[in-house]
Amino acid sequence: MRTRTPEQLMDVEVRQAAKEEQNQIEALLNDYLAELSQHREICVGATSAAEYRYLKDYWSDSSRFPFTLWTNGELAGFAFVRRTEEDQKPVFQVAEFFVKPKYRPLRGRPRRGNQYLAKVPWLVGIAGDEPQ
Image 1 (spheres, rainbow, N blue to C red):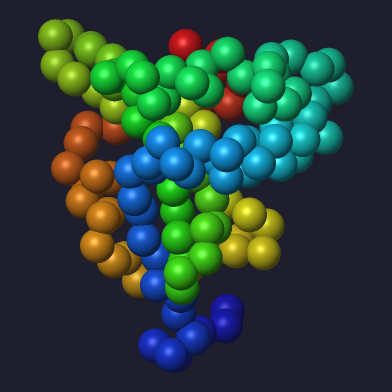
Image 2: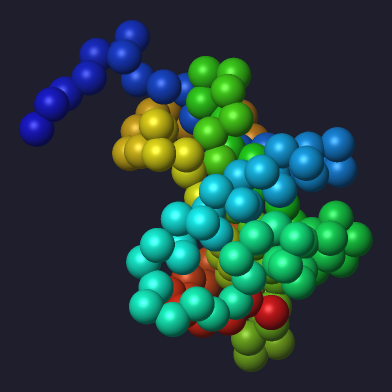
């Protein structure tokens, strides 16, 4: 196992995405869906951002949250999170998560903004579940 010195670690930051970042996220979503399609025997679901049914909802629905992942000032990926309820308690589900291949594994030290991820109860689904 290789170890990294503090100078070699990347700063990793999670931000709630602004409406102005939607085009950048669409480009990443296209990369993500293309990568997923390479690992499927049968194509199911969206294969491009244009076909992704919930994309615009992440900027208009109060129960959906788009996030961007940044490292050393560069856009490294995105996450789509949705809030649901389970036993009358809010639960947050990761609907989509993508990190550009050049940033994998995304090892680094957390920075500001990561409180979005640290303060909520998470429910992670099984691959193949259709996001709603």
